[in-house]
Length: 319
Image (cartoon, rainbow, N blue to C red):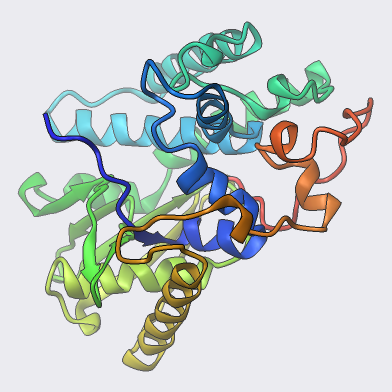
């Protein structure tokens, strides 16, 4: 088996990390590279473990996305999951993952769920964990009550384009990751690209949707005039259609172009995607540092969390 190569790529997540803190970006995409190997340097291994952490809000969004994916796959295969069964399975998974995270299983098995709140001792009241569970249940109940879901059910599965496609496509020589959660052709022969949300948009929602429009053009070869970009907020049950035109898409292309250029300017060797830690400055915003996965490595002098949890950075979003 060939050795894995740390190939340069672009995604909205990577773009957000770069804008928020250059040092965090370095740890996430360069410092942690190779940390999965048995003989990895202890610091590299530590960065790799920390890289996998997520806040409880991010975890909730991930659980809902996984549940919706399971429901759609079962539907496609002809044995639909009931609402009650899906909720029961997801809550059971939530409890198991929470317990494993609290016990620190992720430190030995980094791909297992690891919560930022457990790693850094963020005091969370039992009522807050219960509210998170209720939020997940509400999202899954709303999913089953969507008129959009009825349209999906009426659509022959051979007209389903994809479910959670993790593929990439080339953009001006750079591998770009940007794919919607679900896609299908409706009765009007229009491509419906669906993005499941479990909370607010956070920053960069327009950029994310623009990436989906690019996906439709570059991967699926479908003109924008035949595409509907649907944002589905499962917390509220609201479906929002976002129109796109060539001018909007040009702005997205230019954003990606400039972002790639800025990222590569920090590299020691852009051709080989090699980076040096010293070239990536640390953020001076303690609000960002406080909720950073790498705070114990980058700024160990930060005080521990106290009884009341401060608000998450404004860029944090659910789902």
